[in-house]
Structures are given as C-alpha cells and as structure tokens.
Length: 287
Image 1: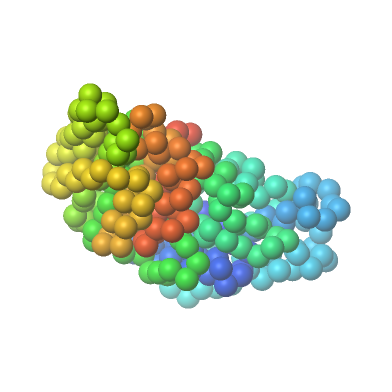
Image 2: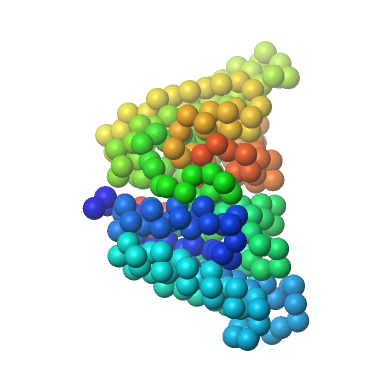
C-alpha cells in the first residue's frame, strides 16, 4: 500500500458522462492508496421549487442522484474500496465546500448535467476550487480516468497559496516517488528593464523555495523559469506530466495565479489532471 496524507476522498457526482472520468479517477486513486470514498450528489434547489434539507425521494432529480451515487459505490466496492454515498438538497458549491472540511481531498469534473449538480467551471467547480478546505483534483471531461503520479509539475509564484500547494504536491510526489519540476512563469513581456530584473529575482526565489521544500523530503526538484503568458505556458507544459499542482491565488506582479484568470484558464484547458490548493485549505492533512 502506498501511504499518503489522503485517507478520505470526496467525489461530487451527477452520474453524467462528463463527470465519469473524475469518478473513475477517484476510484483508481483510492485503490492505489487504500483510501475510502464518499460519493456526494447535491440536488440543486435553485432549479426547482423545494425546501432545503431532506431530499424529495420521489423526485426525478433525487432518483438520478441516487443512481449516480450508487454507481460510484458499486464500482468502488467491486475493487474492495470502502465507499458510501450522500444525497442532499442544497446549493452545490456551498454544500461541497462545507463537506470538504471532513475530507482530505476532493476529486471532481469540470462539467456536469444541467439541472442537477452543475459542475461547470466558472460556476460550481470554480467556487469549490477557490474555497475548499481540502485540495481539489479537477479532471476534464474526456481526459484520463486513471490515477498516475510519476511526473509532477508544480506551478508556483512564491505566494502564500503557492507555498501550500507546493507542500501538498511534494508530499504526494514523495509517496509515489515522482519526479518534480517547479515552474515559474515570468510574465515580463511588456516590462521595463528594471521591472524585468525584479521579476527575474522573484521567479528564481519562487522555484528555489520549491527546491528547498523538496530537499526536506529528500526530493530533487528540477527548476524551470519561462517568460510568456502564464496560462498558455503552464497548459503547454502540462502535456508532459501526469499531474499539475498549483495554488488558486498568488502574488500580484508575477504569475498572477488568481482564480478567474490563470488558474481558471489552466484548469479548463490543461492536458493533465490539476490539483489545486486554495488559501482556505488547511495543512492538517499533511504528515
């Protein structure tokens, strides 16, 4: 068994084809690290007249949610993974974020079935990524459904959120013996010479921080600093890695890792699964 800090995985699902990759990825991850899974389906009360709290067991939306949750439980149980389900009436982003306090990591898709959980980037997924108390791994529809962690890319700008994401990423890399590259994108195309020098110093400091954190875990980290558009550079680089790790907020003036700009663009178009760590994420999960 591979030991990690992630023992309890939360999987928001609506059973649609668009979220199946994420549920399969979560199940494969749980299998490899011997974690337990909770499948969560939130029946969105904003889409029809209902009362928050206990779901209406007879409604079509409840029945769809029940089917979605049961499929995850059955698939996990077939692999001897401890799995359970939860269905609630509520507001998806709010209730997923609230539930994140009880789990070590969330695995979710970027799109979902209209009228149900609405796991759509820019709506639920973006709010969860921004506010979750636990790391979130986002799987794009149609991407891989198998968990793999042999080559990891950590995008950093040295800000507070980057520090959190670096520590979570390195911990996971240590567990799987993954190689790690620390990438900082210097967005200095239109800067003055003096500003570029300052940007270069910040970029070097950012990757050096990752190298220093990696050294504490006996991990060798390869530094990489590239000038260009942060989102474009990170997405292009992601094609060579199994997983990309990044924070959702960052230092202004460097890579601008603010949800709604770089992080959102990267999650939407990355070539591999993206693990995000927000400023709300706690560090208690890490060993």
